[in-house]
Amino acid sequence: MEMAPDTIVARATAPGVGAVALVRLSGPDALGVVGALLGEGAGPLEPRVASLRPLRDPRAGELLDRAIVTFFPGPASYTGEDVVEIATHGGELVPGGVIEACAAMGARRALPGEFTQRAYLNGKLDLVQAEAIHDLIEGRSPMARRTALHQMEGGLSQRIAGIRDGLIALEALLVHHLDFPDEDDPPVSTAELAGRGDALAERLERLRSTAPEGMLLREGALAVLAGPPNAGKSSLFNAIVGSERAIVTDTPGTTRDAIEVPVSIGGFPFRLIDTAGIRSRAEKVERIGIEVALRYLSAAQVVLYCHRASEAWEPEEIAFLEGLDPARSILLLTCSDEGARGLAAGEQDPVPAGVGPLASDPVRVSAHSGQGLERLKERLAGMAFSGLRSR
Image (cartoon, rainbow, N blue to C red; front, side, top):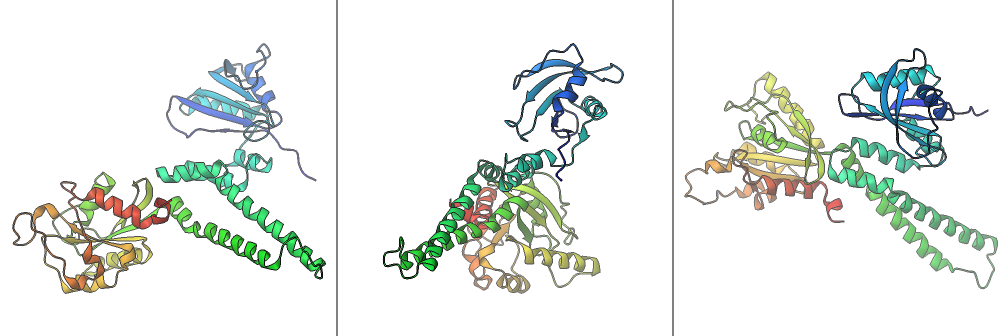
């Protein structure tokens, strides 16, 4: 036997100091619970009309706040149930006191995500739209926001529904052929059935192919800075992040562990990683940092290999670069404003041919002057999110 839903209450805005906090109730007795806080002499709440009301604790009559109260009768509400939203003053004490008073009047404190769960169970949202709400709240970039809003508006749901309708129609035609195999004039020929099946398979494959991009938008593409010690990785890391997150010194091997920061680049989410300098001659602690760096490199969507423009190329570096995948790697000539070894003003230092395909299009950058940073960000977004950028 299915239990009748109870009335739930929770804060709908983030905790902390702010001008306004929103307390939300949903359930069959939402109006009754809030009515207890308004008192017997309060006038009725007109649906969808915000009104300024004093709220009192029914147990002691103490004034809790003067708040804006709005009533949304079901089923035309977010959850499909009766919903009341109370906009109180912000902070912790005022909304906390209102929630405590509502709980004393019979409302249960909602579990995380329970309002959206009720919206889904009551048919106000499908599962894709419910997940999109979570993605919108957790999104860390403009593209993640746009994608989540598109799914909330039913973009992905409509694509899935179209494929489902096509499969049902195809199934009905196939059943007709099975039931009446000797019919001279079937509604659709077997050749056309095969064509429809191929078209549906292609639509399914196109939809499936977007899954990795969806994961990248949700979690952020992993971009790893790598290279020898003192190649300017940490300075570049700080320049991209926009704050001093990594320690920068002239001493090689300063960075011993990986540092990860979520950033938005070109409107797309990234997890930017600064790693220890890679070299064969390293002491024990530094070797552990190098092992961590290599693990991150193996999982990276984009590898940013840094070589200081003013330094000579070591055979060890060239051998390492030969093992990188050019489709997911960018060669960076860092500290480019320092000038290269023995070159005239404006002359470019050639990259050794042994570096491989990455030598054809390096990005010259300077964390100090900002030179090349915009080009680097453009290359990063294009490499990690090429499919989304082309749409």
